[in-house]
Image (tube, rainbow, N blue to C red; front, side):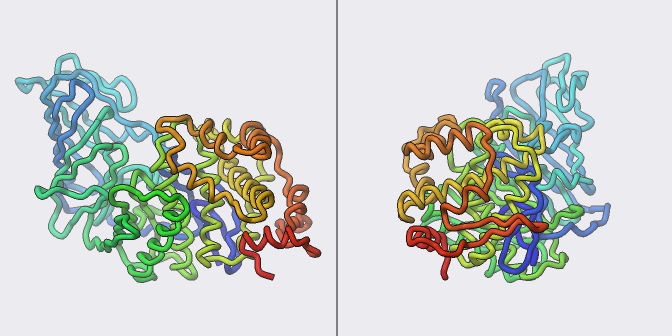
Amino acid sequence: MPVTIGCVRVRGPRNCIPVNKFPAKAQRRKASFPLRLCAFARNFPKTLGLLVVFMCTFVSTQGKATTRVKISIPAAGQIKVEAEKLSPARSWSFRNAYAGALGIAERVEEFRAFGDSGQDALVKKSAAGEYQSELDATRISYTVQLANSRPTDIPHVSWLAEDRGLLMLADLVPVGVQSVSAEFELPAGWTVESSVTPDTNGRYEVGMPDKAVFLVGRSLRKASKSVSGMMLETVFNGTWRFKDEEAVDAATAVMEKYLALTGFKLPGKSVIMFVPTPVSLGTSIWKAETRGSTVVVLMDPAARVERWLGQVRVLLTHEMLHLWVPNALKLEGDYDWFFEGFTLYTALRTALDLKIIDFKGYLTTLAGVYDAYISHPDTRSLIDESERRWSSEGSQVYVKGMLVAFLYDLMVRKDSGGRTTLANYYRELFSGGVADGADGNEAIIRLLGSSPAGVEFTKSYIETNKEIRLEQLLPAYGLQLDASGKSSQLRVSSGLSEDQKQLLRSLGYRN
């Protein structure tokens, strides 16, 4: 049965999550990689008879001028933007890259600017997404092409399909926006859903536009509930091979698990969106991103996948943890090794705890991760890999990060007789001991290195590029790695000591 752990592309037998490939995923979201969970999208007609008008007021860094923006979509995949700006300006720029998606600003076309009296300000394009005028302008207009999105860019950028779309303010309005008051006028039968709750006038007040995601379309279904005091809304579009309430129950269980893990209640409303992908993803079956307090899952409902609900439950163990890490943390820097690699391992542990997988599946997954690790050179520290994540293959951020989390978990369990685990450090991370704005690498390494053994461990496997050899490291914990076949096998050793039995039982082993 093909299954996934978070955003790792994997396939394998029933109740296991072995890894085959680790494509890139977005920081602070998220992310995404091709996964063996859902399939490619249907092909949609190229004509779209609709009109969407998106009115918003935003405060710009340029003198905090208030601007009203009208976005209309008279045909498939194209947005027409007209913005009236009260404070004159001569330059504008648009985001050109995000999470590996490049050339986003090239979708902006026909950019024009106008002065107070309506005269053309003679705009020149100086670079991709960079525009300058010769005169002070108080009004601008442009189009944004949202059709034919590249599979590698989904779901990191705005797109429109036949009867639905994802609109992200980060790539639809010029950069430098501080706050947005958005109002939508949609075609008949269309609605809008977001983690932002509209006011009585139907406006959406957005304090951080770069994290705002709006799902628009026909036949949007949603379910809202309170999970231990946290608001969770699950939105569905399309027809799936699982019931809406089953997905809601799965998300609820994961949310409760991560509240217990971190001890931190998410503020505001969290939203999970299940949406048919707008384009074929090739060999991928689904992609996902968590941006701000919104989890977007793009899947192909026609994909031939066994046990759809099981696949969704595994997916949520990874994606929903990103609502906390890194999105609820206020740390700086490139600490992707932690919020991707350690998240993959913690999601695997969560899948085991929730009985989504069994202990054999847990071991099989880790063996597959190890095969992926040794198939790539390990020449940089995890910190360096995180810094170069988008300029290189970046797989070690995921595979080595996940293995380092596994080894760290084994170490602290062994030292404490199974009473302390990696999970304990997540609660400390959210307990208030880490200052807002702190460097993520320094703060987390200091936390993990709170013991002499932890200091040596983080120095070896995170700050420097010490090679991981599971066949040498695991026997001390009662585990053995057999790499004699085409794929490695991870098994429980025979003749376990009492301490090893106690450690493995704390992991979930039952003999």
